[in-house]
Each structure stands twice: as C-alpha cells, then as structure tokens.
Image (tube, rainbow, N blue to C red; front, side, top):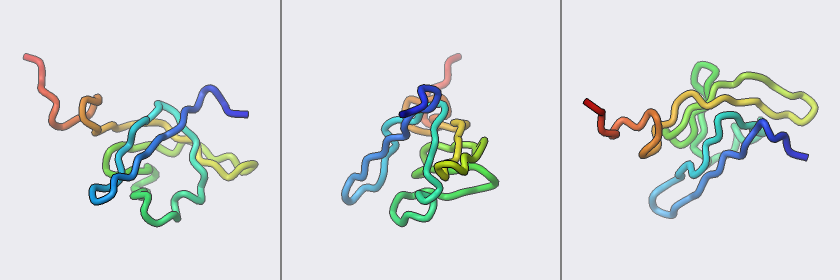
Length: 91
C-alpha cells in the first residue's frame, strides 16, 4: 500500500540525450539500492540527492523496514519550474 503523503519521482531515458525528470513531487521515498544503480544519474552531495542535474532532494529520514529514504524537494531546475535559471524575471 502506498503512502499518499509521498509521490513517485518519474524519470524518462532519452537515447542519445540522457535522463529527464518528468515528475518531482514535494515528498518522495526512494529505495536505498537506487543510489548504487549505474546510469540513473543520481549522486549524493552533503546529504542531498541530486537527480539528473535537474532536481535536488534533501534526505529527511530512513525507514529500515523497507530500506527507503524519505526525501523532500528543495531545488527544481527543470524548465518552467521554481528554480529554472532560464525563467524570465518579472519587473
């Protein structure tokens, strides 16, 4: 049974281009084993999980029962999102 407080991070792999983050919920859970999966473009920096250089999640907890990390979205650099560096600024 899924927890309604946590959403699913959804990624798409584009051949010849790389990984894009399609869905980045405010809160998510991630299996610890994913950190060791090659080709997912995940890295841990100072306790934060960076996914495909597009979103950053802070690790807020760990559930030993199912080996998952609880994550909170802190940066979203995808086009049109809150931290998009190419977004037009309003005067």
